[in-house]
Amino acid sequence: MNEMEAIESTYFDKCTVYRDVEITNEWNETIIDEHATIYKNISCAISKNTLATTSQTDTANTITYSLQLFLNPLYIIEKGDEIEVTYQNRTIKTVAGQHHVYPSHQEVILKYDGEI
Image (cartoon, rainbow, N blue to C red; front, top):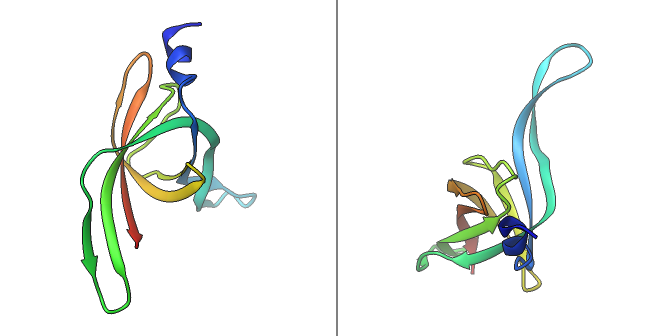
């Protein structure tokens, strides 16, 4: 077992990556496939990165914070990808930001905006 496999064996969370991609249809027209599934149910780990900020309107309370996603470096994650992360029987939708790739793993900053 190499270092990448050893680290990946500690990932107990799952994520699915979505991205808008251009495709060519049967009439040779280029169209945007919004929310195409790029990777599904890949092993990952998630960690809270920053303290939350909240805002309140008449209809909802909104919370915004950053998370850090750890996953295999062989997956190509792009800034702006929508990443749905499932951890501890909870699923949240996030957006990928800056990422750093290392030989053994990669770290991706995720932004979460949700209602509380």
